[in-house]
Each structure stands twice: as C-alpha cells, then as structure tokens.
Amino acid sequence: MDNTDEKMKLVSPAGLSPAQPLLRWLRVVIVVVLTVSMGGWLAACGPDGSGTPKTVAPKTSFAANFSRVEESLRVRWSVTNTGNQPILAFDRILPSDGVFDPDVGNGAYVIGRSDGTIEIAMRAFPVPKGIEGVQAYVFHTTRLAPGASTGGNLIVLLPFRHRPAAPVKGGGDLLPANPRRAVFCLGVIAADSRLVSQARDSEHPVLPHTQRVADAQTRLCSDPFALV
Image (cartoon, rainbow, N blue to C red):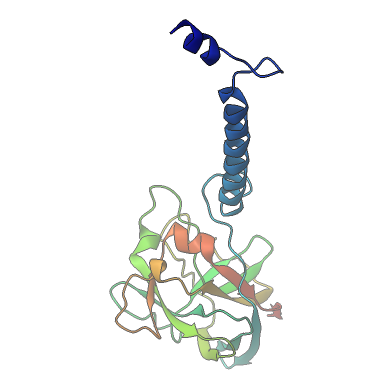
C-alpha cells in the first residue's frame, strides 16, 4: 500500500499534478465558448445588449406623388420589394371596429410635425407606457415577395383634420396652424409570422399596433409637397 500511495503522489516536472493541465485546458475552452456565445447574443440584441433585436431595413423602391384637386389633397404612392426576403407593407389602416374615416380615402393618420409639416401616415407610432388607445388600431398589410409591388391612392379633404393614431400622446403631434408642406410616410416590415395577429389571409395579414411592431418597422417618407 505504501508504494501505491507514493506512486499516486507523483507530480509533473513543472510541479503540477497530472489532472491540473487538463483542468486548465478545460477552463480555456469554456472561456472561449462563452465569449463566442455572448458575442452572438449581443449581435442579435441592441447595441447595449438590452434584448431589443436589431432590425435590418428592408430594401425597397418607394415613390409618392401629390396633387391638389378642388378641396382635397390626393396622394398616389407605390412601393416595390427590391430585396430577397418577403416584406409587409402597411397599406390599409383601420380602427379595430372597422369604421372608415370619411375624410381619408382608404385609411391614414394625419398628424403634424414641429417644423410646420403635415404628415399623412400609414405607419406605426411608438406606444408610451399606459397608453392603450393606439393599440386599438390594427394594420391590414400586403405581403410582398421579392420583386413584387403594391400601391394606392389617398384622398384627404382640406382643410386638414387631425387624425392621430391615439387620442392622446403617442399617436402624432397636433396639426400646425399654418401648414406649409405635406409628406406621405409608409411603414414596411420584414414578413415575420411571430408578429401576425390574424392569419385569415396569408397575403394580407393583420398586425397589431404595438410597440414591438413600431420598433421593427422601417419608415419610408416622400419628399415634401409645398402647400403654399
């Protein structure tokens, strides 16, 4: 037994037990794996690692033309998916009860900007905490495969009437007293089934007006159209 005990106490020439080099190697491997894993996790999150995924803006070709016809402003718009992944275009905005606004052709928000611009919008707005009004609205979208296009026409009666996405803050600013220009903005988003609230029509899915959707959208805006 004494001889056996002596053999078990043998050490390497560097003064390490036979198990210690293996343990050190395992520590190095664990550190490397954790570093790679954390790097991949941070790449999928916001720049601060907050858990908010970074989104890649869809590739699109977007155009909008304005014209004044009697007491109305008309907008003809189109968008084409020039990328290689399907996207959704927010091409029809309705309240959850399905009631159209008679002053806007097929549904759009009409809000102001601080520089005196009117924004005619078919896009998502940030949802402040505690504000539920904006979440009562939904987006009827059109799914665009790579190379596909969609478009539409809007008729906004003049003078402009404020139509925010929510009755209080979070749905767009009040209209300027003397608007000088107008823009049209459209929201598009990568086609992600996790965001779709109703799958009755795979080509025209419905999205809820939530902060998650607002964070994931890309906003496309036209050049300003002079009103005066």
